[in-house]
Amino acid sequence: MRLFAAVLPPREQLTELAQVVDRLSHLPGADKLRWTSRPGWHFTLAFMGEVEDELLPDLHARLARAAHRTQPFPLRLHSGGHFGRAVLWTGAAGDLDEMRLLAERADAAARRAGVPMDEHRRYQAHLTVARARDGVDLRPFVDALTPFEGTRWQVADLALVRSNLPTGGVPGEQPRYETVATWPLGGAVEPPG
Image (cartoon, rainbow, N blue to C red; front, side, top):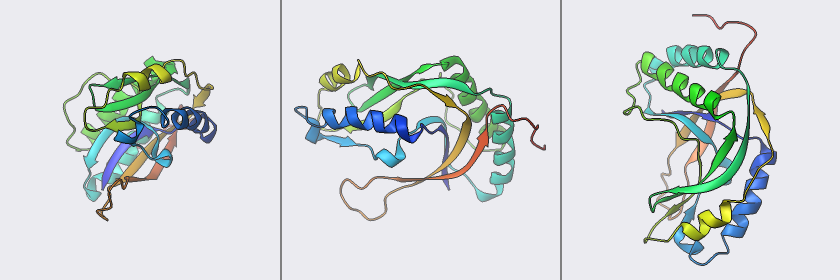
């Protein structure tokens, strides 16, 4: 199954972002963006790709350990940016050092469980809101996202999410995301193993 570790913002914070994205969707050129599915909004910590079933028990144990060793931390959705001419995102503010640490621990947990991971690079917290096609200028969208300051929340869980890619061949069809497991951060009891 296709998996990634993630931080899932609460509904209230996603509603705040949705209000901003609704305004963005009325800007010139918005019809040339492929907007991401709101039920799927998340901060990817470690993308694992296809994971063999026999690796899952060890992966779950190692992710539980990673969560246990990481303290809950404050976060809020914040501002915006883009990667090249292809991805429009909102960022995060708060304890980004703790979030990076959680991302590194999730990546290490997957590697130690035998999941072949892509080349490691420095983590940058971002939540993708749209993907561009046809060379759309993302700057007006970034400018509109820049003043966005979401309400703070306490990140309390590490989630393992399954990505179900579209299979229907319908234009614009989005992946579906399913939370497979969650582990509390800074757990009171050391997980077995």
